[in-house]
Image 1 (tube, protein in one colour):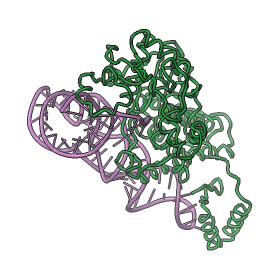
Image 2: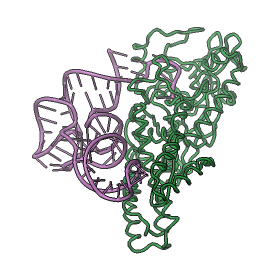
Image 3: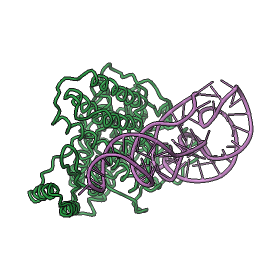
Image 4: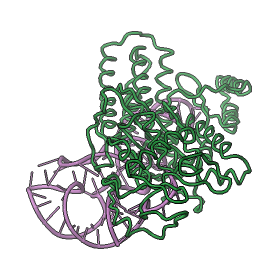
Amino acid sequence: MKVYNTLNRKKEEFIPLEEGKVKMYVCGPTVYNFIHIGNARPMIVFDTVRRYLEYKGYQVNFVSNFTDIDDKIIKKAVEEGVSPQEISQRYIAECKKDMADLNVKEATTHPLATQEIDGMLSMISTLIEKGFAYAVEDGTVYFRTRKFKEYGKLSHKNLDDLQAGHREIKVTGAAKEDEVDFVLWKPKKDDEPYWESPWCQGRPGWHIECSVMSKKYLGEEIDIHAGGEDLIFPHHENEIAQSEACNGKLFAKYWLHNGFLNIDNRKMSKSLGNFFTVREIGEKYDLQVLRFFMLSAHYRSPLNFSADLMEAAKNGLERILTAADHVKDLMKNTKTQQMTEEDAAVWNGSLEFTKKFEEALEDDFNTADGVSAIFELVKYSNTKVNETSSMELLEKLYEQMNTLCDILGILLERKEEILEEEIENLIAERQNARKEKNFARGDEIRDILLNKGIVLEDTREGVKWKRA
RNA sequence: GGCGUCGUAGCCAAGAGGUAAGGCAGAGGUCUGCAACACCUUCAUCACCAGUUCAAAUCUGGUCGACGCCUCCA
């Protein structure tokens, strides 16, 4: 398996630190509002990476944090006149709901920054002892960036360029030794929440959280650290500096970063008015569609989002689900149990698509190619399978589709929906009308149901319906 | 200004030296009471220019265009 490592900008063979196990950390959201669809991309993409690793038999320890203390959270709390905890708790719950609808698996551990303050104090102390950090008069603690010789190895920046390119830096509080130094701990302002520390009453800087949580739940050295490409600098660069300066070990072996999600070819931002939360999209589409859409491109490519593209994704996904439904329906009426010779040949032929799918995912998680393998399997199934197919073949084919879709986190089983009695009666009435060749009444009923969002399809296996 | 990514059909998107996967949309057809589903057929020489090579969408150089990071941001 090859993975693209941002550290050296090359695809590398994936070799875990410990055989059969993968330690993986994904930077999670700051919880001050509903998550937006940009937040959803790394969640979906790295959940898929995890699922593939698990499919390969790895035991994956997957850690993803929630940043629950931060300026934006405090700001929101002040606006609403409630505590920051109330804000963060609320949006953690909402975020988990969205993740469930996106079929993103729960992390092995979802640590919260505010629960890890002790670890942060300890790491900051160690950094000060080792000379990698210093406190200034007002109690702010800075990381001594130039002291860490490898600084810039992830983002491929050098400190002199950074310094030259630096625009006016708004330094609050006491002056730092060097303008490239960054904050590890900062003093509280006014009634902000705070924790006691040897330096001042205050709270942690953003970067230190992830270094500490990764170390606590996964250890000093991990296999994969992932997040959005915008985190490469400064967030991940700073994490490397903190962790490696503190632990004296390589922090993470592979760094994976997903490309950005744009809206109508522009960066998503509130000021442009092209900002969508996952919740909003969920009102118009099953979030499976959003997931399928995101996986239709390579995770490192920028991905554009628009209504048309969502429609296309919806139709494509529908094609896959319809094929699976068809196989399932055939199972109800199949006469033969065991595969015939002919069936066995069909089954063998289908293995080609699993192979193609695996080869795609092996190559830096190329889900776009993986999806195309599923489409080819769908076409193959639609063509090869019929009323004479054996139960064994049908089950195997369904299982194969299900396995591949499950790696992508796509559910083949449609949600069970209970038809209201009225709708059932209408469908029955329509069947009678059709039997008596009263097609006018039949079509009328179909239109009535269509208006209720129910689409009917007459197939050989009987009447089927689905939500529009 | 520094660092970096990308330009493949109407749209989305793989492919990374050997003669363009897959999907959506469209067109024509088969099936169906009609429709839907499904199936069949059809739909590109890869931004441009110049090189390297027996061979380039794939390598090199240049041009144009789009975008990202350098500041909170997934």
